Amino acid sequence: MPVKILTLEALLRRLPDNHHARLQIEEEYGIMMAGYKGEKAVDFYLKEIPKENYHVMTGLRIYEGESFFQMDNLIITPKYLLIIEVKNLAGILFFDHQYQQLIRTLNGVEEVFDYPIVQTNRQRKKLSNWLVENKFRPVPIETLVVISNKKAIIKSSIYLEEVIRSPSLPIRIDNLESKYKTKLFTENEMKKLKKLLLKKHVEEKLDYMTRFSMEQTDLIVGPHCPICYSLEITKQPKGWICKNECNFTLVQLLKSSLLDFRYLFSSTITNNQFRYFMRIKSKSTSNHMIRSLGLKPNGAQKNRTYHIPY
Image 1 (cartoon, rainbow, N blue to C red):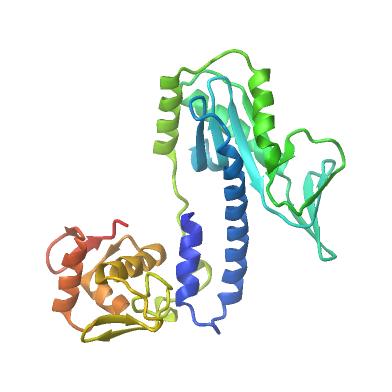
Image 2: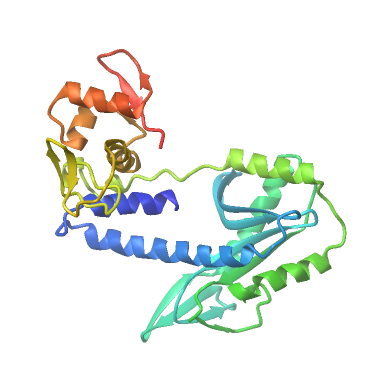
């Protein structure tokens, strides 16, 4: 699950229903989830690719020149590279090649999106430059725009060979295999490329608190159930109890809740922050919980922080 989605889920879990930013965040979450489901639908067909000849990488974000470029999927083969841009849009999708725009009509409403062909052309150029910068040999780079929504109706001002539906993906890859005859990468070179791409991948920094003009005090604190995600958790003599009577251990409860802190604020936490976020009054109790989690300390006792590794 992408970090963006996990962060939005943590935010929505802890945001009051009447908060001014909730509707905007819910809309963004819906868009992100639609994209993620589309990529998972494409993954189903990517599983048909023979693993011994291909390396499939997802969600890469690489810096080249003066900016980053992102690829939903990159397939590394001995003969060529394939960039796949996934679109999970419902409705009538009109590819207006003359004006370089994608027009979606849904429930009688027209909406304009970035032209996917322009996106993939930029990705190809950026990846080609990156390969040269990192001393890899020139290699053909193919691109595909895959429409993953089964109910989408695709229309275009001209025939676009690079736009396909997800079930056609294995066939298109077979065609590319026939198109390219010369092997340019050995298995070791493919692994080297994959390793370097993973090393150079940079997660996008997310600061939804600033973006949506929110303060930490806007959020509901306290542990949440690792099973049903409810924030209605009470401390009783026999332990922490969820309103839905879910079964979990203390460690599971704390780990799940600390992830919210990591997504929303920071990958490190102090004892004071731990007590505030978990709604614990006793410093010794919070120290005991932190030790039970095995969090690594950093710094002197007074300013000590703990890394959240999950």
